[in-house]
Length: 289
Image 1 (cartoon, rainbow, N blue to C red):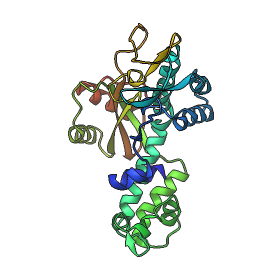
Image 2: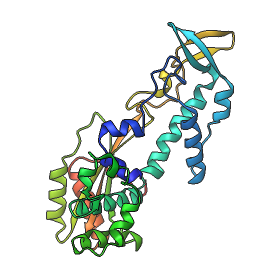
Image 3: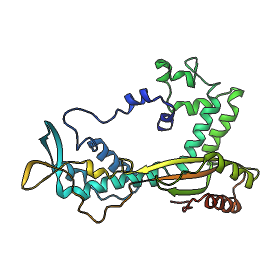
Image 4: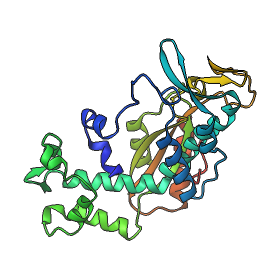
């Protein structure tokens, strides 16, 4: 289902994934929630990503304090490092799991298959694109689309069907170059990079994927949006004080990856793709990062 969210209009997404509540009592200044804590911990354990935050300890030291005419759920000032570790774990999960090169490659293949089938595949008598404006058909946009395409006998879906079979056979799009850059640095041109990759490496086709990774508040330190209280002033809200020398200066980076979507991939392809990335001023990263 997560792979299909990118096709949903923003007004519908707002109902599926509602924004932070604007109710008078904001949970940890509307940036933390029990769901966020619990889900992050669950996913981290499931994929063996170590984390050092203790959400039960955060909840133990949480209390409601009224400030500026509205109640806020605040935490003890000594919990700053624990909350920072929570957001740090979020970044690491995006880096090592949600945006893993294999996961992105599979997502690309599913996306391409759905685009190939969008005009021919009918859901409740409507094409996938038209389903977005029909709630009855829209509710049928789920993981079953994968199998609907794969098991179809319609000759118009043959190309999409073969692409999905490649996923099952692990013949995936392969990442051949990867680079990380900061938000304030110049973003490489998609058209220029793809054109140069295909001209310098004949017989292959490439697709670029751009992604962001952050701590939850884009370029901002998310901890500064949390309200705290001190041991000796239990009913007084205190803003975060930047006294730590260990917090990083940057809280967001961006990545660009080149995937070979057709043709044989060998060591020469990797070397040439990385060379092209460097010529465009990109700092090539380890492909396993």
